[in-house]
Image 1 (cartoon, rainbow, N blue to C red):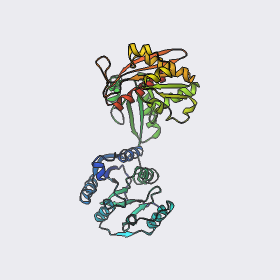
Image 2 (cartoon, rainbow, N blue to C red; image 1 turned 45 degrees about the vertical axis):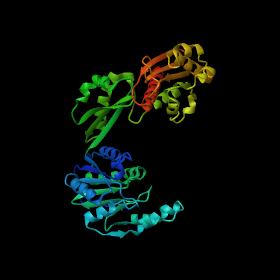
Image 3 (tube, rainbow, N blue to C red; image 1 turned 120 degrees about the vertical axis):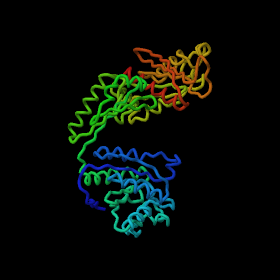
Image 4 (cartoon, one colour; image 1 turned 135 degrees about the horizontal axis):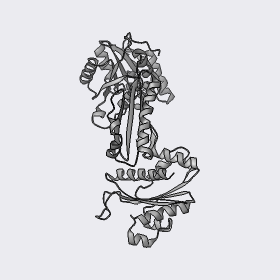
Length: 422
């Protein structure tokens, strides 16, 4: 359906996001929609000052919308447009607008086509999705069954979106962002750049960029600690895309000069992607023998498309017999030093390289917990080894956290070791 612009004065606007769904309040579903919408609005210079979550309750939804209308230019709701009785967003909007629900024949046809394509008769419950407030604007959902709605409420724009991320994301990118851009005039350009760092704690990174973290708008830098890595996010706001890009580049160059090879990538890049690019560029191959990580390093390396060019073998060798019989680890080394030791990690890496005839062999052994630790070998102790034609490296690492967190940190350390050697 063709979008008709609401008669608003073109000026800088701010937005508010209301996520609707009791399942969100109970923690049954992670709310990714708010982050996605906020990011997309930021790209066109729309500030989001408030975000909230409310259950499937008409009274509380109405209260949230009225509060948003008192302080925000654009109100975006997500969820509650489905076919079930607890989906009450449309009825609530109709009540607020003092409009009755009427059958929209075009939406009804879309519903029938949607289910016909799936060889399903339209469920009676889904018919209610064809009823929308009289005279309201709507947008066809190209992925799902619930249309998006746009209305003028108390001189503000209210946009209602379906909850499933697959449907919402498509609507936001194809329809909502272009619509908001037109009604707002989008006078500002907001750009961001995320610098990804590994091999140092948040406090260590903070010490190297403390002055940059103190920068004032329009260009700012934030620091965010994640499991196994740290991110520095540069953000700037300008009326010129060219000037915004220059501001980002100036700060990024300063960060790179200080952190050097601790930086493995930017924005959506991953450390496994960085390793894959280096291996492919150098035409080198790798084999991995894993004990405590259970195949996680192999999994991450093969998540990258084209991994068959460089990844030859991954072996999850938990049993000492497998370590000895397949990888050639010395039984005497295991007996004297234990399976979790530098010598065993080294021999696992050497054995993996020999077995797969690769340029690089990786060995990992450790204690992921939660049990099995001792005073001399506590949970979180991990040895990682790299063997190539030119050098051999064995590192002792100490991690903390849950079993899953220790495994991930170990895999991160391995990938960083490979990256630095390449």
